Length: 251
Image (cartoon, rainbow, N blue to C red; front, side, top):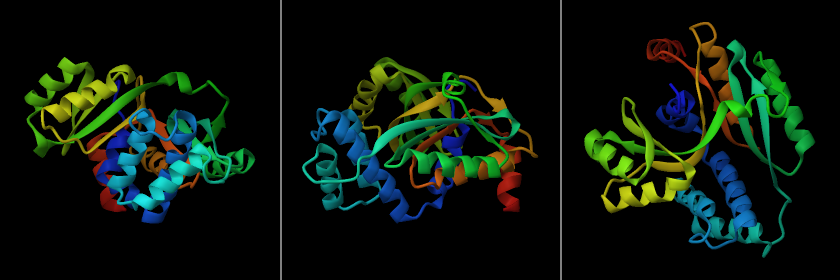
């Protein structure tokens, strides 16, 4: 389905891959630093920083850690020279994978990612060969218990949302980045609480993977996601829920 990420849904249901708290903090601190470096330390004037801080608070990160990361980003406190870089790859079944990393050593990061991807039956791709298959979108996740689908659809579309996908336990609203803050504000004004809201990359179309390929691509995605330098990883695969259930039951 265009505009939908099966990987995002799987991660949410698995509790962000059951990630350890320390690893979550490391990734969030890097994002806060980069956001502050690029857009300044005022969260009201820096939407990316505001989103990173909200994510950090949701993960119960202490305020001192957040403030220290902001100061490192703005240069008030000396820190590592982090930079953003995007990597592209193909996984089993021809699945396209886009990886966003924050690193202080590009050579180390690309070497480690190449090892992970090759070990799982994929290969790194040249710049631009995969990125065109994705588009930047705002993605807002709302628990089904928060509101009815009709109410959400009315509020979100009036504010400029593009699409609404209904999952087993949640709604996913996708929106053009230009309207992202407007849709979030409209939901807040309507007293509709969202679980998560962030800018992401959604596939323009998806590749269906069968029961043979699905376990391989999921294992690769988890291994990539587990790398300390990876902030986000996106893929254009789709898996039937029945196949996914079989994989989870056999794990």
